[in-house]
Image (cartoon, rainbow, N blue to C red; front, side, top):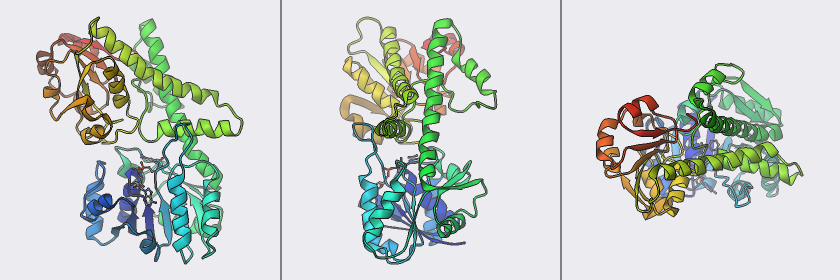
Length: 431
Ligand SMILES: NC(=O)c1ccc[n+]([C@@H]2O[C@H](COP(=O)([O-])OP(=O)(O)OC[C@H]3O[C@@H](n4cnc5c(N)ncnc54)[C@H](O)[C@@H]3O)[C@@H](O)[C@H]2O)c1
């Protein structure tokens, strides 16, 4: 059944959620305090790179099912469901900064004058639904329900993931809110898990922490593989064939990054600690992830030899993963910062993320729009992001353009035998 939906926050998650809900037939209004973002969206341009998103925005703007505004009070006037999809960044101590969520809750409380379901999509600590409920109720204006509806989309395939998820989890404590949330998602055929709000909030952290653990686990296996002469790619294949384990998230390399895993793993560790529980496993996961970056930097320095000052390293990939322009907590950015400390000169190429990388790395790096220009006179190439297009590059030409043919493959994207046949000195991770 068609609903009138408001999505507060038009970032990586909110924009996708809004455009996809409009595609499902709902009337959707996307809200953001960022005027530039909203102006862009109104003209049919996506503020982020996400495959298929801009087409979806345009199609639904045209059909009159998708609108954007900077005014939450205006958007609320006809809302039946209000999704909160604002950021919950990590504080310095690893805890989750909830200020944007609280601000939105207050604004809803001040302005909502009829029953609506407030659905929280931001990743938040257990107990948030209760606190949002209290904040809105303190304005004593209307009845409402608060539900927790964690989002599992992955950047790079967010549209596909939202429309065809493995499951939809809704933490809803009242039959009325459960019914409305069922209607919101009625067109998506997937298992739907209706549970209490606290458990739903925990599902998101538990899922992300598990995936991050898988990554750190295979990275530790990779480090042992290097010592005993095994190849972690082959090992991961053999391990992943076991259906109880599966292939995904068994790619050894520079470790996880992005706006979710690092922050969510730290937040869960912090939540446990606040309740007097020392989550030792997660401590190890975080430490191993940091170590992967350090090990790759060591490898680069070793390959470059003694006098490394001023030598040029060409970095392929700045985004935290392929198919996105997001550089938040990107392993590539962290490694570049470490390499700069050793006075190396850095050239970088990324198909999508250069503009965002400039905002964090500034003039520390020379940016290129051609991979071939990036490698001119470089002593070493580092593959830092798993963009598949790096595989298809003319590596023979790259070898000729470089000063010395050294490659550190931080994502195990290339084949050692082929690279060595072309005359490269090649090192992957765990191979
Ligand atoms: N990025 C992902 O793939 C992903 C996946 C699942 C869950 N999440 C979670 O979803 C949440 C949002 O993440 P994101 O990556 O979209 O963040 P983001 O920073 O890209 O977007 C957040 C948006 O909220 C806006 N905002 C802040 N305060 C506002 C207010 N008072 N009113 C209206 N808009 C406001 C900001 O301007 C920004 O555009 C986080 O909790 C994150 O952990 C993210």
